[in-house]
Image (cartoon, rainbow, N blue to C red; front, side, top):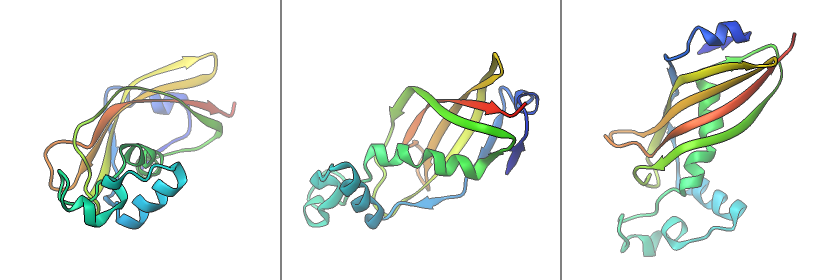
Amino acid sequence: MLTINSYEEFAQYEGQQLGISDWLEVDQQRINAFADATLDHQWIHVDTERAKEGPFGQTIVHGYLTLSLLPYLWQEIIQVNNLKMMVNYGMDNMKFGQAVLSGQSIRLVASLQSIANLRGICKTEIKFSIEIKDQRKPALTGVATFLYHFNQ
């Protein structure tokens, strides 16, 4: 795990891969809990019997569930210390490349695309790919922008 304590430490990784998370299995129980939390009970996600006859032969993970796991996976790659707070600022160029099937495992691969000091606020653009174990095509790619407010 990479440990960062300041803007200057972060900046030295610009243009480089920051790391790769561990694999995380996304099981049907997590899919169902996400469906309950978001009120998205589309059959392709929650109806295991009907999904057998669907295009994937089983249920699939909500795309937004895959995206929502980004902060958890990000924390496996990097620990940023000396912070007042961190704010999710935006997402760009996000693309769902392939469905994640129930029971498959995903991981995050992240690189520091750019970094800027905005009047004491560290703005990072993290290029990410959420990969599916034993699959060539990623589940999700994009650029996440985070604002890190370091203590002085």
